[in-house]
View 1 (cartoon, helix red, strand yellow):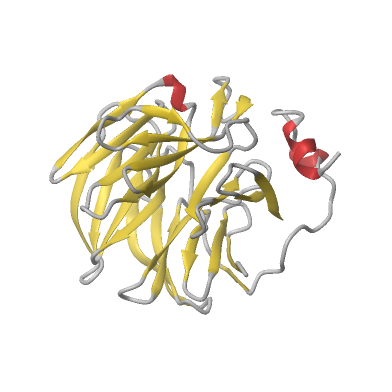
View 2 (tube, rainbow, N blue to C red):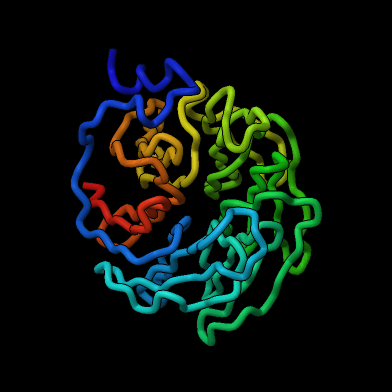
Length: 289
């Protein structure tokens, strides 16, 4: 029985039951000193990373959350570059602006002057999670708690799609006319426990039609999701600490076996995959090739 088959055999597989051995490459660098880092995004124009820090409960409006700036070689530029957020999670960067999912609002920051320029409330949202932006500047935000995806178009922030079939939408990736969605799984109502793990599907960005895509067999509690540049994907499984490579034909291959808490991954220069390790308060960089 291979490693992936073992993981698929039980959606309730607990961390302590996993064999203790290393899978995949060692990190190129590791940076510590964060406070529950959840997401990382590379700002090419500025040649640096932004990292969200929850720094408290994931749904608490406590003002403890902040954003860090990190250099491409793994040095902390400024730990608390932007303070006063609540529980910031997913990040997206576009044309000098940083978009932050913060519980039930989308926060927009001008990175040139480090000022918040807008806050878009998501009425009824429970757990805004990942953020993605398309070439036209439209911003997409997953709400894992209500099985919804929100879209910011101009100054209008509204639900694009709400359906139980989204099964805890988390990771988002714009790909042509589609929005690729990585689901956390079917939640039981007991915290983030799932009765069935998540998989990848897609949403038509014009019609909002939901359709199956790759990896239709539930196999992971998906958090971060990026393109591998070859027609496939790389995604993280927060609950089990895994990072998978998904081929263009939908085959899931375990690439990294890490500790629990591998959160919203991002891509950086020099073919680096950045993995925020939320429970370790670390950011790790891995060479993709």
